[in-house]
Image (cartoon, rainbow, N blue to C red; front, side, top):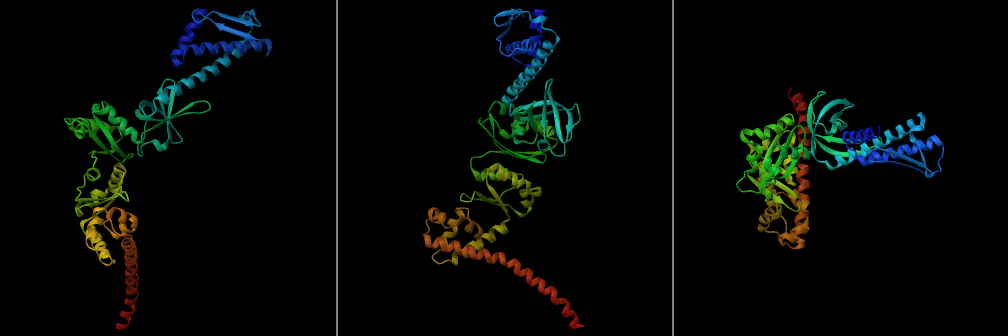
Length: 408
């Protein structure tokens, strides 16, 4: 019987991943509760010990040995209830300790069911994970029994359970998938330097190689696209753009806006804004469907990106040149300096303000203030022109019927 107790403890420890010593301690505490229940004594000193090798149980009440087997059914029931509670608590602690260390890892599991939009996933024989609707890829549905991969996003201790929050929309899910599919990333030969994602639609990944002999884009795509294909299939067809990382912001922005071809890029460090010029036929590619391409490129590079056609760019430069010429104390060389600073329109000049012009371009303070004030005035006039034109068009439409009547 005593050896059987040791075997039971070993089985529980193995099945529930609980330390064997913790279970023995729990058993001893449960038996102490049973003894107190039997004698109705809260004051006496009660000690119960279990031999870890033989399973022999010895119990003392006020240093007098008692036979714990003769306590009866009710104390045994008390011991059982206390034991169940303690093992459940130990199991929760074990699950929490295991999964909190695995936070940020990819895990596979079997779909169990949906509960009010939340997907319940069986991670192993004793643990379930929860994937809220916000962490599920839009448009994807999963059948019970289906095996899926997901990211361990968060681990929380609730009152009666450990909540393991899973995600398939987090950018790190893509990062971990690349580590699984691309050995060079797992071995740190290739690094993912930047990642921007709109889950279910499109992701941009910027990669760099630490070995000149390894092409980062080719390694990520794989032979005939085998590696990237596996990732795309896992994501249900989500588009993935792999771009080459570059420490030069201009080059990185050009790469990030692919497949569009960029003609020119002007960076304004004061505003954190990049003005990108693309040909008319490249405009829709650069912007992307619903602005997705430029939006992801902006998040990937950390720059606000404005896309302009050559005509729009030239118009902005013309207005800026006129503003400079009309400002007292300013000369033509200031235009080139402003363009070099990334200021390519009067609106940029208004946003930058006078102080950077003095510090960066060595323009005297009064001239800089007049230049900014003049740009604000011109910007107001420019904003008023469409309104004025709309009013004129409206008046023209109202007078046309009257002229027709007079003619008749």
